[in-house]
Image 1 (cartoon, rainbow, N blue to C red):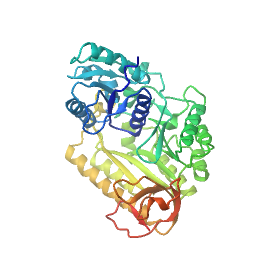
Image 2: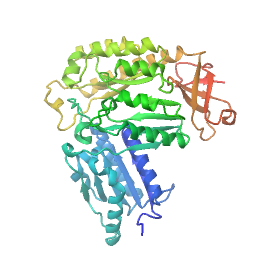
Image 3: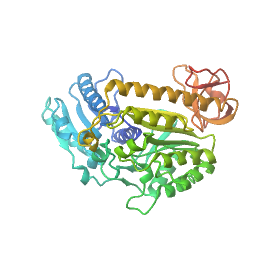
Image 4: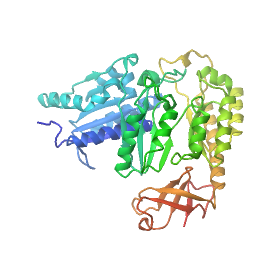
Amino acid sequence: MNILENKKARYQTLGCKLNFAETNSLRDKMLQQGVALAGEGEVADICIVNTCSVTDMADHKCRQTIHRMLRENPGCLMVVLGCYAQLQPEAIASFEGVDLVIGMEHKGHTIEYIGRALARKQQQPGHACHESIAVASKDIRTFVPSCSHGDRTRYFLKVQDGCNYYCSYCTIPIARGRSRSGTVAEMVAQAEQVAAQGGKEIVITGVNIGDFGHGTNETFFDLVRALDKVEGIERYRISSIEPNLLTDDIIDFCASSRAFMPHFHIPLQSGSNEVLRLMRRRYDTTLFRKKIERVKQVRPDTFIGVDVIVGTRGETDELFEESFRFIEGLDISQLHVFSYSERPGTKALEIPYIVLPATKHERSQRLLDLSEVKRLNHYRQHIGKRRPVLWEHAKNGMPLQGFTDNYIRVECSGSQNELRQDNMITTEVLGDFNENQTSLTIE
C-alpha cells in the first residue's frame, strides 16, 4: 500500500533558482507517487517548505512561511528542507507543528522520509513528529540531480551543488557542503529528456557552477560543449559564474555557439580591491574588468548582469565610492544589489568596521539607480534590431511577453495563435519605449 496515494500537498520555496529547481523536481516525483497539488481553498495533507538562509531576513521569512502554512493547513505533515534546515535543524524541529526537518545530505530520500513520518502521524493524530535528519556540512557528499520545468517556458538544470570557497560573509558552504556535481553524461541525458518533453530553453543552475567536475576529471567547459550538441534545445543560459572561473575558452565558445545565449551573470560583490580582500574573493577588479571587456569584444550585444553586496563590514565611505566608480565604468547591463547581513559563524564578524543600516540603504539605492541607467542603455542600443524571442504563455488576457536571446523583455500585442507552435519568432524590437517601462513593446 502506498501511504502517499491520494494525498494533497502544498509547496513553498524561498531563495535561489537552485531551490526552485529542487522543489519542482520533488513536486514531480511526488505526483508520480500519487500526491496531487492542493487546490485553492483546500487543506493540504503535506506542506513542504524549501528554505533559504542567505540573510537574517531570509531566516525570518522562512519562519513566517512555516507558521502561515501551519495555520492555513491544520493537521498537515509539515516538512522543512533547504539551507535554513541544514543550519538550524534542531531549532526548526522544535517549532510547534513541524514534523520533519531534512538536511542536505538526505534530501534525495525526502519522499521516503515523508512516507515514514505520515505513518507515524496517522498512529498519533494531532501530534507533530519533531524529527530532524541532518549531518554536519563536512559530511555532505551526495549530489542530488534536479531538472525541473518552471512556470514559464524554460527548464532549470542543476549541474552542481555546494562550494569550496568560504567567502568571509557567506554561509553557503556550511549550509550546502563541499562542491560536487553530476557527470557530463548525466547532465546531457537530462537535457535530452527536456528536449523530448518539448522544452526549448534550459537555465544551468548550481551554487558555483564554474567549479563543475569535482571528482569526475571533467570541467564546466566540457559540459558547455556537450550540452550545445543536444538537439531540440534552442537556448541555454548560465545562471551565474564566478569571474575567475569564466575562462576565455567559455566566453569564446558561447559567443559562437549554436544555443548558448549572449547572456552572462557574473558576481562582482564589490568594485574595491580592499573590500574584495576582506570578502576573501578570488579575483580583483583588474581581472573582473578584463572578463567584461573580453565578453564585449567577442559579442558586443551580450547582456551582462552583475551581483553587488553593499554595506559589508569594512566598507568605509571611501571604499564604497571607489566601488561605485568602478561599477559605473563597466560596460554591463544590470545590477543585482544585496545588503550585507550578519551571519553567525562567518569570518566577516571579525572585521571591526560596521556600516549603519541607513547607510546600507542609501548605498543600495544609488546602485539601483545606476542599474536602471545601464539597463535602459542596453535596451536603447537594440531598438529597431531584429532578435529571436522565446514567448511565454500569456495569462488572464495580458499581452504576450518573452525575452530576446540577449535578455531584453518584450511584449507583443498579437495573438498567441499567430506565433509558431514552438514559441520562437524573429521580430523587430521597436515601438513605444520610455524610461518608465520594464520591457519593449513590439507590434
